[in-house]
Image (cartoon, rainbow, N blue to C red; front, side):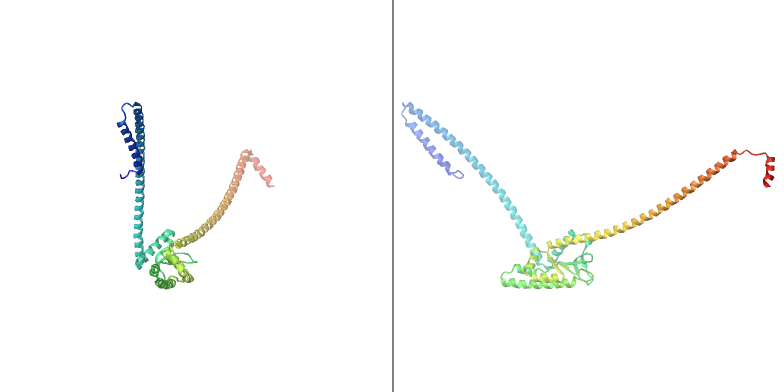
Length: 340
């Protein structure tokens, strides 16, 4: 039967045979042999007990087997669910890769993709006043972005429209000849684009002596350094530096630190000017306090003199009140003698 282990039959068949033999013996035993009957009854009882025990073990084994089967089925369903989710993610990722490939294959879409990525990184790493988007230089060239750094080094222009057709042809080349042709085309594209950036984005007196060429792919950045290190070094000598999303992230971090340092220096200069003004006002306050102290001292001296004069007047008044007035005749006689 389906679902019943083979060892079950190996146990049940001998038990059935023994039970059948015991029944036959009971059927054909002599009627007067009581002892044999008792032995056969005991044997039948033992066989019944053994069969019951075997049946109980069989039931327990079947229950455990069914439980293990259900647990295995449950784990299998869980793994199938995980596999389905992974398959859905892989299908979604495949669709995104296909979309990205189509995007990078279209020049206009590729440029928009690089611009969006560049703009997001600039907005995330730099203050709003530290960069300008689609800035037009004095020579009429419009760069994708201009990072406003103080002199030196000065504002730095960024370009994000590197041609990817030759690189894609190199990665999908079916044989060595096609790979070599794509490699030469990639070298020509690098040299031509570096020439454009160096001639249009580097303006003495207006920008820094270098410009950044943003590559929207880490793989492209690695392939250029691996396949054409001479061209990368030549671009650097001309002031054009190739940056990937990862390297641009670090460069923008350094530029942000430089902007912060310049801002702190400007704020420190303003603070020094305010401190100088405060010191000047403190000196003026000290002079005015000294003048006030001098005026107060002079006022105190005047008050002392007034008090002294008042005391003299009061003393004179007291003496006048204490003097005894002489008769008028004596006063007139004394007058001629005093005149002689």
